[in-house]
Image 1 (cartoon, rainbow, N blue to C red):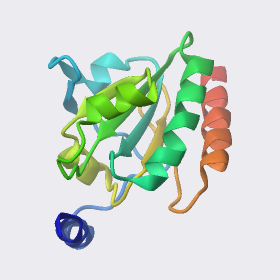
Image 2: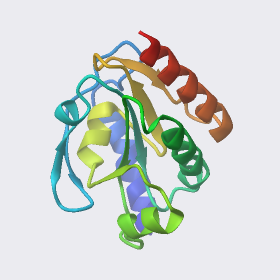
Image 3: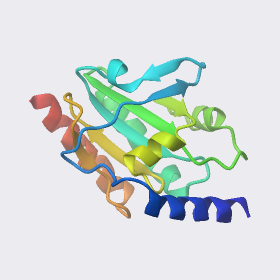
Image 4: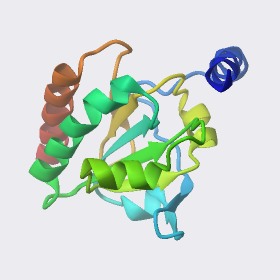
Length: 165
């Protein structure tokens, strides 16, 4: 029942919110809670760096398929000027996102309570993923339905291109 209500809520926000961010748009700044309770300011934390921003949820089967691939890309770029943010959204309260993240062995930054940020970015579903260059311009947005292997290749290519500039 809760998932049906969540689906209806997400469907309604599709008609009431601003246009989704697209490649070429400036990524919006946000402040979100990290796992330790501290606050992370996106612009400050990622200043001068490329970033990957993924909106996900513990109940999302597509996220479960994609997140291990993001971890692989994170490990490939973690010692370079690239930040990875997993923004947890639209949770149903059944699973603690930090526990889920830890149990899966993900080591990049998890942020909590990102519903409003997802709405601001126009993320209507999970997973939604953006790659943002050093100047805060969106250079990649995962198209709905793109499989995880293609996303992995796409974000790897976009990160490499952005780092080369």
